[in-house]
Length: 87
Length: 362
Image (cartoon, rainbow over all chains, first blue to last red; front, side, top):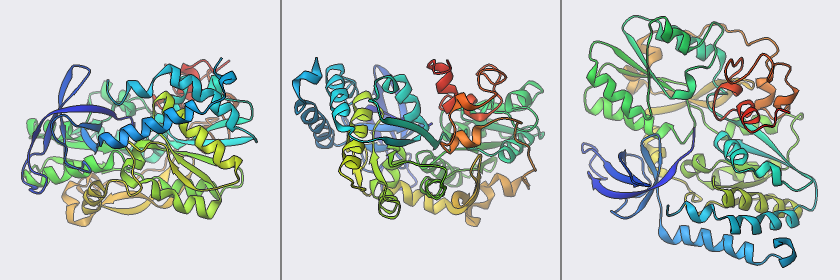
């Protein structure tokens, strides 16, 4: 139920501070394009950003540095392993 | 796909499996709270590579599974009402109440729409002005902000034939209820990823402090899950109990205040019944009086019926992590995905469904 996947923003509509506007992003995930709502996203995305989408709503806008740091830490964890365990 | 493939990298995963073996230095019982984690753990074969001494227990984090029998019965009786059209997330369709399921109601003529988003239900309301559309709100913190936004959109757009039946639940209170149960012995918690995107990793601080419990927030890809387990094993190995975040790209310490503000505008805390866990104070959300016109329970004057649980079904104890599906006398005999008796077998994220699907039924 709580599965949500990262999708790339290709278009942004609406204004985060004006509740009367429709807040919609067009997103693309593996060639599939669809509209998602931006009503509850933590920070307003720009075209090219990635958002985490759950049940039609973006709930988080990914910050590249956070994702890279996440990956870096994982790689460090793996590199510090003793080589015999890799075989 | 960016932000996905690199977290599924098999070379990286292989290294992490080795690291996990090294990190487990004493017996560990870890509860994965979230149903999406349960499925991801099975799907990625994580259970088959767990080091000796590390036991994973599934928790109460499948929203369909913890929906109480009285709520299911109320959903079904509502769907049977003339002029009502019910919109649901697909998982709910076949969950049995005391007398059949929404699928049975549908076959006798009830109007039931399976939707991907609560916003789709609002569209159905716009297109069917003669029907009252009832969206059945089942879910945790990940789902609630969207439902709140949908109610606000209905109000802004003046849509009068859309209501929500809220059985929305919040995560920390049932965990506290479980931790107070001496039958459950765990020393670590794999905290949900997307619930935490909303409530923030900081929400688990009281659990770490008051229950001396290692808490690690993790994502859903293979390396995310392994990383989360390594963090837990190391922390417990060092004798520590703190909150760590292994899903930094999505979860922050404070979560998503914008989403929480939206939820707070529409909903207020209430006591809620959970299947298997009973009524837990402050564990649910009801629609505030200010928005009563969008509350199905007010508009349709619903009282929750007395309901019976299926005889012999151990869903309750399975949700609490006390029993596993193989210990249930109905598992894979009378209760199968084709003919489910309990909700843990119906939902694609239920522990019994996962055990069945991934061959742990032997």
